[in-house]
Length: 450
Image (cartoon, rainbow, N blue to C red; front, top):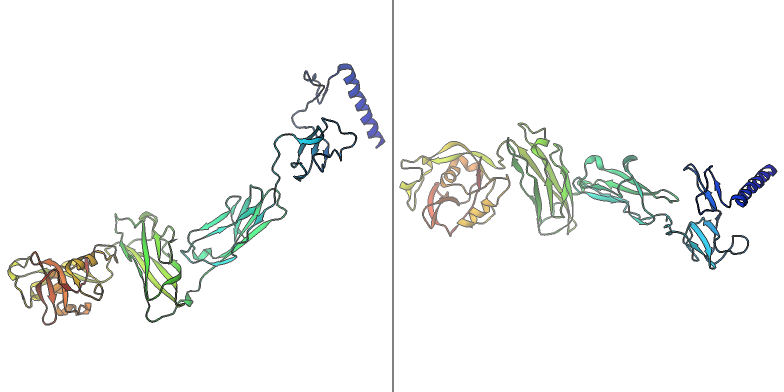
């Protein structure tokens, strides 16, 4: 210790001696001091000047610096405290009775306060969630490390882990570790994504009906692409839906995502055809199920399976189309009488297939234009439904087609008789075709071409 003290005295003597001779001193190199400087500190670029480090208590208090208060005294205040006129760590100069900080005060680092999220929620396939780490207070930047069941998902990037839709492999526990520069401890938030139990949705309440409407088949034969998306909408009578979980079974991986719009509908966005390698002669499919909690408390479900196939879709009966084979012409011009009687013998089957809807449209009769509209608005197969022409309709009404459950008395065709009359069939006795005013009403069975 004595040796160090003596060495300090020697160095001090050398500096003071040099100062008394040259009036200027360079420390750190052999070069002359910069003109105008009494002391020039130089280094090789890796050394600095370390000022005395003190802990000030007040901007107007000289202590803990010793001796008399002298303007120009310079120290480094070494705490972040921003009290009594002090503005955190930095270089302070005493002048005119107070300490003043040099330069712009640095914002002190503040530890984080993190909000506590809902720890557990039910996430269904197709029912996306935003898992988010919310820092209420604290100094940025923040580092976020997301994990699922202990496996790192992303690091130092986003405060959110987004799930637009869930697959079966996405259920589990999600955690996010959050830190900043002055965090005293690691902050962690946790989400548990649990699967809803479909076995609860088995009620069959009376007086309530529910269905899921939308296109269930798409013709994506060569040269045709998959639809960009398709919407499926719940229709409920007798109650309302208070909560809906959408369950998407995409075993053939035909969807690009699944977006839940509301408790009443879901939109399924499809990949392009080129992205689905499994489509060959067999159709690919995706099913959508709505697990519904009704306003009555009952829990019900409904499922639709959507097919994408290489042929024209038919959700009904596939039959051969009927053509007129009478002695006059295909226009039936020679047979326009008010009551034609049995004319089924003049119709034969063609090689062209026709898709016949499984059931009549609605439970009531429609006027002619309304009948056209109700078929045109039908979209079950994603194709153009229409009223059958009189040849097709008559063939469907012959005894050999009674398995199609067309047992109502009268059905409209789309074929006009004249400006104000339309051909219809009547099977109350023997199948026959008759003209009828187009403002009258008849039952409707829709068809589409194959």
